[in-house]
Image (cartoon, rainbow, N blue to C red; front, top):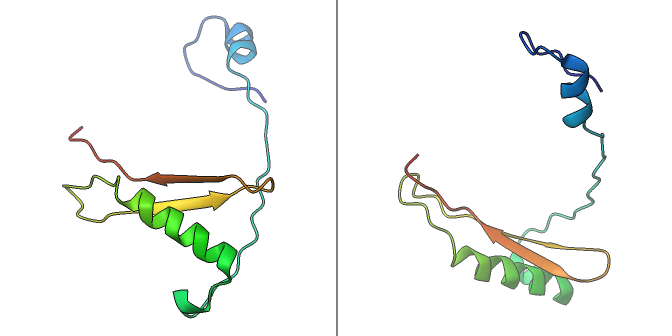
Amino acid sequence: MTVGCGNIPNLALYNRLFSMKKHTLQADFFAYESPDTLPDSDGELLAYARRALENSYSPYANFKVGAAVRFANGEMLGGANYENAS
């Protein structure tokens, strides 16, 4: 991929240093009517997301977010939003 940037003197060097490769991410998911209907493994994932929610810091939006994902190898990763004044 090449990048067109107005006044960069050496565009070929810029493109070599900052070139990107395209990757595709695919996700499959199920939607449940209530947390009570989740299979045990998905209940664990929901609990992980709720624990991540405890790390949310949103004094401006007042909208806390916690999320979790389980990889194909079974490992789980959680995250939360964290706002700052800037």
